[in-house]
Length: 226
Length: 74
Image 1 (cartoon, helix red, strand yellow):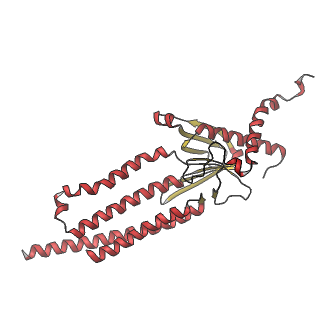
Image 2 (cartoon, rainbow over the protein chains, first blue to last red; image 1 turned 180 degrees about the horizontal axis):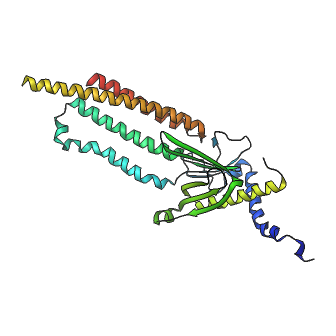
Image 3 (cartoon, rainbow over the protein chains, first blue to last red; image 1 turned 90 degrees about the vertical axis):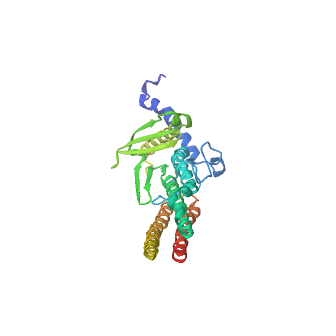
């Protein structure tokens, strides 16, 4: 019998449902097998972690499972690391200034120590901004923690089923070479746009988001919405 | 000559007060950093919280040490 009674929509969604099934299978894998997945890491400083083991965040639902933890690619830190290196070297050049030489020894010591303390603070601040500026993708929503500086942070979240459009942007030589870029997510939530900046593997992230959306749609159809 | 020595003393007294004031403001800043770090580690747990908290505490302790040192040696 020809498939004329089969909905064309269903046929089209067959492969998508298959992919969604793949993700669902991964989620139900035992912990040992999840450890072998590509992109899974035990490093707490990893910029891309697929099904991370110990990630927990505030307001997380008990049944909510973290699928991805993303940070800016480590390469984006090179600029401030270089700057910090220059800052460390600066006190070695201070004796070149006559005024500095004329100061008593205690003042020279104190100024040098204070300079190193400022350098440490600068490094710590830059590191914390990188470390806490994360994007978390769970099976239910996307959470973006925008840690701009030590005194300003913004937490945005949107449900997976509110995603309207996902755009991958990879531009420039370094980004193409190191394979990182932006993933722009248009949502129907109160915050219309979530931008995951400079994240590694943007294509994979977009694919995972697509799988999650399909899975969410499937759940809705089956009436398994949480 | 005595006047010059006196001027020098005044300058260093101001310098000492300035350094101590700066370090005091810096100490307040590090206390806020410790607090913020605590809040952030509660917001997001990835298994690196102890190191992060320790680093921010080390920074605060260094400022306290430097403040004490400034009062003693300057």
